[in-house]
Length: 431
Image (cartoon, rainbow, N blue to C red; front, side, top):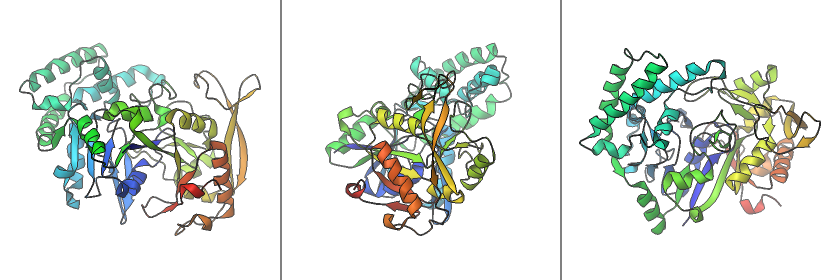
């Protein structure tokens, strides 16, 4: 068996949670492989909206084993809140949720460091969610961090104090006042640590590879988006982990040869939260209409998302470095309100030449989007599940994208509910 990977191809917020929930019945294991509580995966069914931050999106399917992999940075306080919020659904979380001992722990001082670093940057701030993600990955790379398995050690309190004392030195350097913030946060942290001990803490690399050996189907769930990758994203306005397909290998302990299908998710337009370059951003009425129609506000922070037209050079780049095999287009229904729709096909450089490659640094190199315009479909997509029943204008849009991207679009999402989906057989897509 192979591990199928599902990830976002833009700046995050593509709708991964919904699609994991839709695909989950095909799999026996769903595993998160990177990121932390800066991710908000939204699922909606039976008229109820659910937002998951660290727990895999297969958790609502009772027969699926859900794994938080070693590549994740885990906040015990957020973990406990998520579990508490799920209690009313009578899910068997103790049996169906496993946490890697090698996942890194987010300490209360990591969030304080996040805030101190952001404040020090002034107008050049990254736009962090201030959840402590970056500082936790910093400690991991510096070989200073604590991991989930450490909570089982009788020396955990000593290890914790040593790291927190080191953090306090940094906070003092930045003149960041933590005296009133830390005591309550630490009380909640240690209560959450005790809470976590009732769950099954595992060597997840063995669990995943044993599942493959036993012939089980496994789906690896990514967080954030490809253009936020620490190596290949719009650096320095990126997250602190590998959001690419390669991150599934290092974040779960699987070999590259074990990767099967790669599902790449993208919106029919583009959004971005926080700072950083965004070539197709719409700063006028069109962008605001897109934001309101798409309810484009962060699932984790509530911040309004920046909106713009679809960017093909960026999308092609993400497809290339991820080895995407199938595409899933989200939020097509949002574009129903427009009489015409644009797609960026190329960038015009300052010297007047055209390119469809992402520049080394979009922050320093100014590019002007070159657009192709399409007629809008301007009709409701509610209740449409048959691909052949979609409006001709939407069909033309999809066909153009498939031709440009050289990949099939296997699913089209037409709303937030798990039932609002159009799918078709891969073999028929490019005929």
